[in-house]
Amino acid sequence: MSSKDFVFVLGGPGSGKGTQSKWIADEYGLGYLSTGDLLREAVAKVDNPPPGIEETELEELRRLQQIMKSGGLVDDAVVIGLIKKTTQQSDKVHWLIDGFPRKMSQCTKFVEEMGECTAVLCFEVSDEVLTQRLLKRGETSGRADDNLVAIQNRIQTFHNESADVIQHYKGKKKAIVVDGERSVNAVRADCIAEIRKLWHIPVKEGEPKQEAVKTSCCNLL
Image 1 (cartoon, one colour):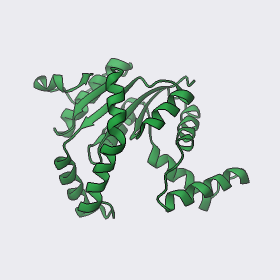
Image 2 (cartoon, one colour):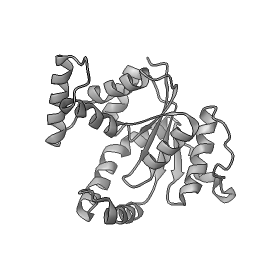
Image 3 (cartoon, helix red, strand yellow):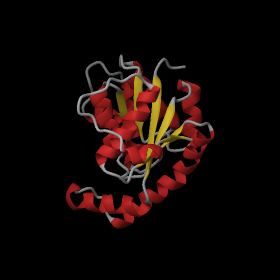
Image 4 (cartoon, helix red, strand yellow):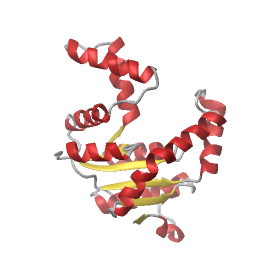
């Protein structure tokens, strides 16, 4: 079991979960990681091996690189192993994990390896708004997957993979649902307020304030 403390951050593509959780982690000194970033950083070592890396580790990273290039699914054990290694090598205790777990098998494996999470922050945004946001981003991002067909597929994949995960944590009274369709500052204020209920984080001068009429949008369900 891990000595670390985790909040999972879930939401559809374009929901703002990555932007918000990364900003909050940086601002308040919390740990932050994205499993997608972890995987990309890991396979980058294949082309630029760090000093002292063992050949057995490089071989495993080559295998992982081929899986990712072919669009295959990375083993849950590999993903959780990267989370475990990254968090244990840091002195940070409280961690926001962006976009994880995507499926129930990852929930189960994580509990076995790391213990239960503290809570799950769920960004609730309609498919229509997600689509509009990603199409808008696609005008300047240059990302190949910011086109209508790819966006619709990504949103459907999120629903197919993550619906059971979110329901699971709602059943355990660990899901904090945030209305992600409001302004960046309104969403951020709610996230900060809810995280402050879980962990001791300082009050910052000039931090976004919760909107009085929106205090019911974040609920521990």
